Length: 619
Image 1: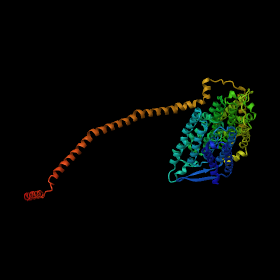
Image 2: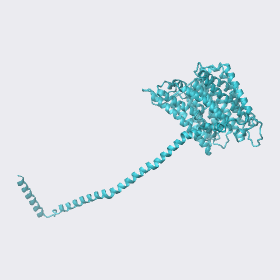
Image 3: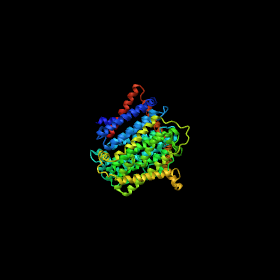
Image 4: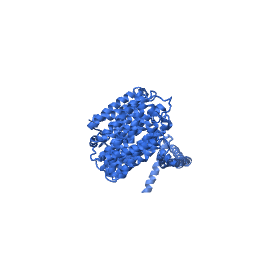
């Protein structure tokens, strides 16, 4: 059983590294290799989801490397591998032969493999390994076209923002380790055992996990990095923002639900942060004139529902939302990428009639957008109501906030549809979308319809049993009708409003269009103080430390010169005087040494005479 799990994570990781090492020589074979690996990984993930294998390997003394597949991680592993396969199918048809395809497909496989490590990790250290590799590969993928300074700057912004939040996981790991006393202290690093920590370590662990999860999932106040991530290729956006990195934080919160409950405050903070993100980023999505920016803001808002579910304890609803959102959002991003390639734009006013020019792509896009809007009988309509039932049980106000977020979903989805389905304009220079890039969109459109089934009994009850989440609140008929009715009214209103400007103050509209000014706030509150501190440290280094070092060096040189001029001269004079005295004594000592026998006899007589006198005087 462990071999199955090791193969699941090692196959995409190993193949990704191999493609990266071989480089441009593997460009022609890279798509085929990547697709073969993705198909194999999907088969392994489905098998693992049914068998629930575990794997263990030596790592540190008392801390083995542990991977495990349970109900939640099994569903996530299947979702990740399925979306990866579809995105790679699209990429194989869309990416031209002139691109560095081995680097692209290698990074995509490495990214998917690190996500699989993240969802199957059983301990914090293993989770951190997958988490870090996922962050590094996302930076490389967002900045894939690295010759463009704007793209590399966007990749840097996304990476640094998520890395700042990732420090929370290190805080959580340190607090978990500190909370475990005795020889088995490493056992406290198990994800299932985090809720058993004592205060104050429990609060530190909770805070670290929550901050890291909110940062990775682009929740408030970290949402702005997802806007920058739109600079990457569309397949990267489709994979990054649907089933992998951006939902990793929501998965972590769903996974550590007992920790949030045990803290006494974590569940409320998470639930209300998710609700606020669903509402505010929904407004941001409505204000966007760029299709990919609209989809990015909607990703933040839709993941806000998953975060809300984690805080409200609605594990089943949050998981159903995650899976349904993965299908819909990956389809929307891939369709946007196809239109960008064919029409050379992603601005909504310039996409007028795009769905009419490419009917199959337009139809698939419509299915995903209607699902995102929460219209029946599509997947996100039912999934959202399942998680909102948990919010209603927690607080009517939380339910109302979630319902408001769902209403906004219908508005921005209808807005996107209004532009792409308006009467077509002449496009003589439009490119043809390859047939190989269309079929993945059709598959995802069918998934948007089929995934409504798990939100209703008896399949929903089976999902709850698989997730070990029995006793979950179930939505009643009036909740389904209410959400569908509100979504229909909101979508109809948005369609009827069309492209007319909203009757809001210019400052308000610009604030929402600028993503609530979150990036500027981050620069004012974090980047600018950090840069000022860095400049102050540099000035201190130049003006104080450098001068101190130069002053001490100058003083040392002066001391050396004084020593050379005074002390060494005195020492040399003393040594010279001793040498001269020694030579003089030597000369005096050599005078009696004449070699004449009578002189030696006279010297002996004189010596004995002196000795006799001394003996007489002493007595």
